[in-house]
Amino acid sequence: DMGGHDTYMHKEISEQPDAVDRVLRGRIDDRFSTVHLGGLNLDAREARTIRRIKILGCGTSYHAGLIGAGLIESMARIPADAEPASEFRYRNPVVDPDTLYIAVSQSGETYDVLAAVQELKRKGARVLGVVNVVGSAIAREADGGVYVHAGPEVCVVSTKCFTNTVTAFALLALHLGRIRDLSVTDGKRIIEGLRKLPSQIEEILKTEEQIKEIAAEYAGAQSMMFIGRVRGYPVALEASLKLKEISYIHAEAYPASELKHGPLALIEPALPTVAIVPDDDLLEKNRAALEEIKARSGRILAVAHQPQPKADHTIVVPKNEDELDPILMGIPLQLLAYHTALAMGRDIDKPRNLAKSVTVE
Ligand code: F6R
Image 1 (tube, protein in one colour):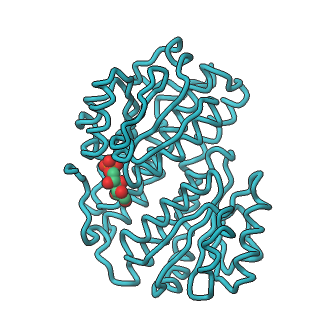
Image 2 (cartoon, rainbow, N blue to C red):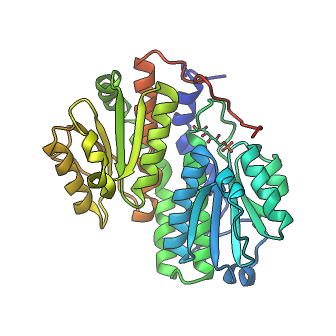
Image 3 (spheres, helix red, strand yellow):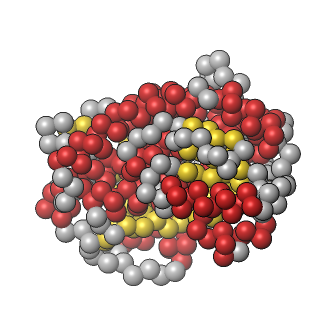
């Protein structure tokens, strides 16, 4: 049942205010400015002994994990990174007893992730799951974890589950942070930011008409460039993946700081750039990248907190706390991919060559 929408993708994008509300519900503890995550199976004493966090996932879940690693590093000050699960498995990684491993999966059935989890467990590592489907294989195999409560996702490409997974990582980062060095004040600040997310997502969804008009301009493009820095870079990676999956337009994602080390050679009027430009400590750096692109006559679409003079179009999104901005900045780009693919007549819910859940290697 598409509930009045033409595609499941559109329905699932539209459901995000409610979905995010669900991942937050019942978990916030205002008294201690922290969150309770019932299924974690990790007490405070154990949480304090973690020296490193390694996040594993595939595709969109890997991208959510990259943002999650950033959230954990900034809030809990635990070194964290994300890696595609199957790359991890095949490089014979050093499995360290002080590392907490986190497997991320919408379906909870992705073979590459499940196999990595089983290998880690066999070696005695502690593995948590950040999973959507309750009771799925990865959820059962993990020592504990956080359900992302996005609800059923039918469209082959992931949208609401990405947003909820990143929000779940913000909860986990806040929880670990408050056990370690995150202050009560900062905890409160993050909680206020989390509570604003559903209504801010509503606001973003209201820009759909504007995004549709922009998408009509990009529908014929041969290729597109997506750029961002630090927190914005995984947003660029995910937006680029979404566009390729459903429109079949070739797209690349780069850190904006890497442009001058190579990809700037590609910039010309026929290769539009989508830039993530949050109002944070990197604003001026991001703006400098827009200038470099404009100087080569590149077209620019900015996703930003204020109109960007060098951009041909800016989709303005509401500002949240710096840490939580990536959750919001991905959403207009789901709509951009959607309307670009729609304008090109693609089969949005069932893109060619792809399956919803990849249970083979
Ligand atoms: C992208 C997409 C895939 C999945 C990947 C992992 O839109 O749907 O890249 O994210 O196959 O799937 P899960 O999260 O079920 O492990």
